[in-house]
Length: 78
Figure (tube, rainbow, N blue to C red):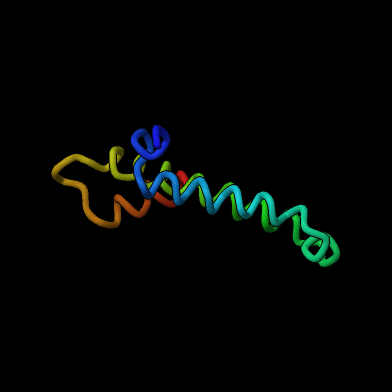
């Protein structure tokens, strides 16, 4: 319950999805198709997305920034 209080529902959901992706990278079916690297990359991407959203939003927080500036900041971090 303490983890939920610190990270919130979305944070716990993101961590669970990333853990499942990391765990599934070791399954024999994934290893036989040589997709372990893809699963690990997806797990890292799931973890990096909220960070990119935060940094992209904070970097373009000035009143003169447009939506394009936000997406530029988001995609550079991502």
